Amino acid sequence: QVQLVESGGGVVQPARSLRLSCEASGFTFSNYGMHWVRQAPGRGLEWVGVISYGGGLQYYADSVKGRFIISRDNSKNTMYLQMNSLRDEDTAVYYCAKEPTTFTANWYFDLWGPGTSVTVSS
Amino acid sequence: EIVLTQSPGTLSLSPGERATLSCRASHNVRGNYLAWYQHKPGQAPRLLIYDASIRATGISDRFSGSGSGTDFTLTISRLEPEDFAVYLCQQYGGSPMTFGPGTKVDIK
Image 1 (cartoon, each protein chain N blue to C red):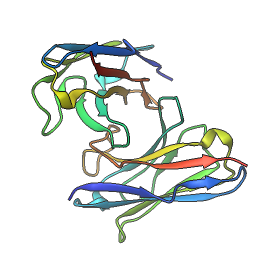
Image 2: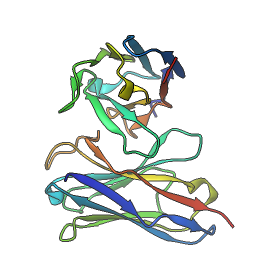
Image 3: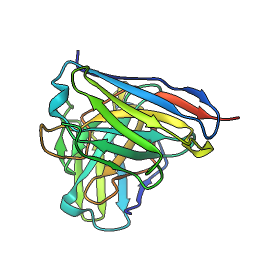
């Protein structure tokens, strides 16, 4: 079954860290660029960042640059989002999403996960 | 950054009716690189349309996309019960990619 499943969300205090995972199945994970997108309560979707199919390139939104790190382990069909120095405004549902074409950057998404919730609160 | 505005915020219609959703961009969307997604609570968003007018694989021909430049439209020709959801537009022609706030299509 072709799917993405996020995990690792929860409640975390400000300034602490949390790592999210996105496990893929049903397709050749190592052939596709992957993204993280988030939705804060009552707000629209916000792109967080992207990692290339091989993992060598990452780009981030200004709002998370220097605090978040995206990585992937193609042997485990899994992408990660390491979130450091968390702030209240990072509270959101975090989605992973797959690009539609192999080996070519095309930044819309033909597959999303159901999301994992992160709450930053003291 | 390209800001996307969607209208109306909520569209109340009956099954069988036609839905017309608008997505307007603050600047020209390069290449008309605009996608539409359907999003239901607690579920993963689903790609409907990409490159403004191309239906994604497996999407019913009741869904169609049109437009160019700064004005884009998603049309659902005859609403089925499963179509009541939030619809989002996304532009990926400019950096960073951005999403609209969504139009909720609910049952009248």
